[in-house]
Length: 364
Image 1 (cartoon, rainbow, N blue to C red):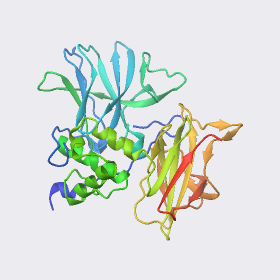
Image 2 (image 1 turned 180 degrees about the vertical axis):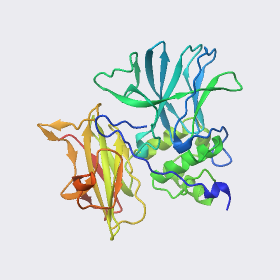
Image 3 (image 1 turned 60 degrees about the vertical axis):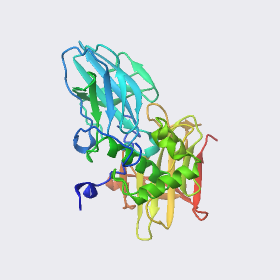
Image 4 (image 1 turned 90 degrees about the vertical axis):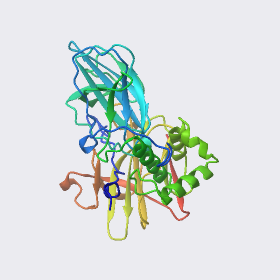
């Protein structure tokens, strides 16, 4: 078995920023290209440079996720942040143009909400302010309303062949560009309900068949594979209700955090949290053929506080008490929640008898 075949795909990861004070972060095989950087545990690495840079600063994405990045500029005790810069797998994005003089450059990155949970652990020591949507924050060490703290990591860009400075985003799989793009396609195909597993950046009949079925179902030609808008088309596709599996749709103006539970006949496993941005849909990853599926969701504000209407939390659940906790979790033990550091939360059963179910979250 080759090293690539042994490589383990990394499909999960949850948004750890659910509650206040918690922060998160071409072509097929023949069509894709290159780059390389090794980072342990998918942690983003930033590099120190005290000298002025006389070139653009680019961030290049070698992950199998469409990401949004934010940068921090630390200069003479003043720190500013700016984001979000959307970057597709195997793509680069200029985040600073021209001469950059800074004591330190810092970076934070998050996966799109469509993946359910950000796979990018944030372990940086600098806690700087960010906002949910696009932002520029001049004094980024003291957050105001609508801003939250996020962990930024110091980076040292390398100089590319074109003279520009480059910082890379990578994961444990150590993909090159070609592999990252294909793994990114595989990951979105799986979310959309097509069998393209394992997510390993290796082309094969399953991936080809899944991709062909996806393109046909969307009325797309194979030419779109070479389009710079291909990943946008895929993301848009997986953010629409599906005829199979479970779909969550957020019809509120608020961010919604959701958890799912599955009963395989032996035990019930609950896990969360999945971020569903306003006016978007999400397909939570459900493997196998569970006998029963349960769902819970609640709306939160920009500071990750639960939204209340008439002093009642704005949530969607039911009577089945299952264990959750404020940060990323997965557990198949559903008794003594409090004694184990969890909370008992009311989930609602989801009727999947028709083969597909869309749950819409709306303000009453």
